[in-house]
Each structure stands twice: as structure tokens, then as C-alpha cells.
Image 1 (cartoon, rainbow, N blue to C red):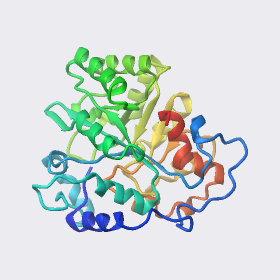
Image 2 (cartoon, rainbow, N blue to C red; image 1 turned 180 degrees about the vertical axis):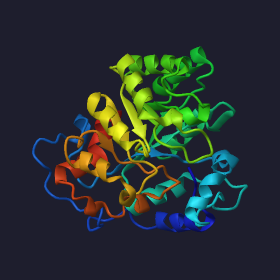
Image 3 (cartoon, rainbow, N blue to C red; image 1 turned 45 degrees about the vertical axis):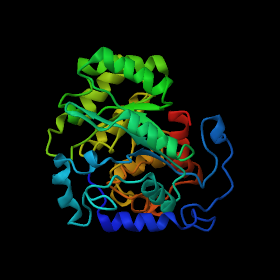
Image 4 (cartoon, one colour; image 1 turned 90 degrees about the horizontal axis):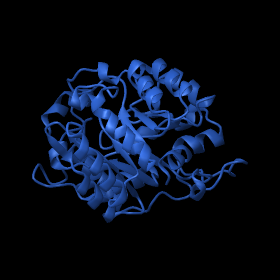
Length: 325
């Protein structure tokens, strides 16, 4: 992922002082809820004004400034950088993330920890502190060190039972092993026991790391075969193996796709066709903030031609159901 530069952060801070988008905000215009959609309290969402971001981070400076993300900055042609709101020495306040959410009408964001072989870039306890600062807006997603299986299982239990997290995310490319590797299996088993989703990344990797670990076939397919009860949320769409990702999500009832790291305008046509048809319940909106601002991620949403029911499910209902919000 890559991150907001100083100018973009200052813009987000200014936005925080404006009102949350009104009923006239283009992304929050309500129409009557389609018949058959339950309320959010029942596990889905019938309020067409609600938007849930399935993959975001509130970054630490360790995360913002890590050299492995340097390769991503060329994608933004210098528009995005790695500076916090007051320079490299200042941690971002939670208000920066909330400002970006408010600017786009995001109701809630699932913010995740980053645990890798060389330590935490965003720790579970830091995520818990961010969530405590805005419990009505932020939802915690934990991460664990898969090189220590028993400790990983105990940490998953702590994340759910003590910290109140709603999912666990581990990035295969960060560990340079696929999710079908035995190191992941204790994590999958504990997620099944606790009834929480396992979140991961599919597709090519932006950082200069091998991408093959992100192939949906064979890796996600094999995981879903071995753990049919496990809910798997596959972030970043799966490009250039989008057809594989769609096939695996169609084949396995508990496999889902989130659109993080892609703006609406960059969604592959086959993903859009899937979302409009038999995949309406299987695709979750996500941003990967602060790589992409929520407002930027949502530009062009109306051009997708989604029905009111599909739009509501994509923007909030599917995430509310999958994550138990």
C-alpha cells in the first residue's frame, strides 16, 4: 500500500471540521429500501445511506515510513507520500482517518493490524486504542505471527474475547508463503472456533515481493476445501487472476471478495458483471485507506449501474452480515 502525503492529510483534517455529509450528499441519497432486506441489527443493512469500508488502516509511523512501500509511490506520481500531518516525527491522530471517512460518507471502517516476520507495523493493541477513540466508527481486525502457531492461536483469542475484534487478517506476501501453507492452518481452525472471518490479500503485490502467493487457484480454493466453515474475505480483487477469484467465490459459499486498493473506475469489467448478477451478495466495498481516500475510491459509483438492493449490499449490507456488525 502507499499513503497520503502531507497536503492530502491536511485536506482530510480540514474536512473533519465540516459536518458529516448531509442527506443531499451524492453518496448518501436514500431511496426506499428494497423488500426483503433486513435491518443492520439483523445482520444486513437496509439503509442505502450506510457505507462500510471492509479494509482500512489507521497507520502508525512505522507503517507509513516502512521502506517496502517505497515502490508504490511511483504509482501516484509524487501525489502521495509518507509524511504524517506534522512531519515524520508525528503520529497521525485518529481524527485524520475519521475526516477521510466523513468526507465520503463512510459510516464505519474495519481497521487492521499489520503483523509480519519482522514485527508489528501496527500492533493489535494499537488498533484497539484507535477503536476506543471512535468506537461507533472504527472496528478492529487483528493480525498474528504465524511463525509461532500456539502463540498465534492465543493472540487470536485475546483479539476477539478481550479486544472485541471482528476478524483476523494475515498477508501471505508479507510472509512469503501461500495461505495453503501449514503455518496458516492453526489460524484458520481458531477462526472457525470463534466464528470470525479470516481476511487476506489476493492478486499481485504492490511492494516488490513475489505475487504467486496471492493466486486464488490453487491457494484460496484449497483453503476453502479444507475449511468449508471458514469465512474468507479476499481483499484487493485478485487482479490479474480476477477470473480465478470469481470462480472460487462462486464455488465456495463462504468465500468473499473485497474491492480494497481499487477505485470504482478501475474495477475489472468481469468483477462488475459478477457484482451485478449472481455475485451481488459476495462483494464488499473496501478502500485500503490511506492508500486511497474513501472519496476517491467511490468516484464513479453511479456508473456501475447497480440496482438499489445490490448497491446497498455492496456498500454495507454484505460487510454487516459477514463481519457481524
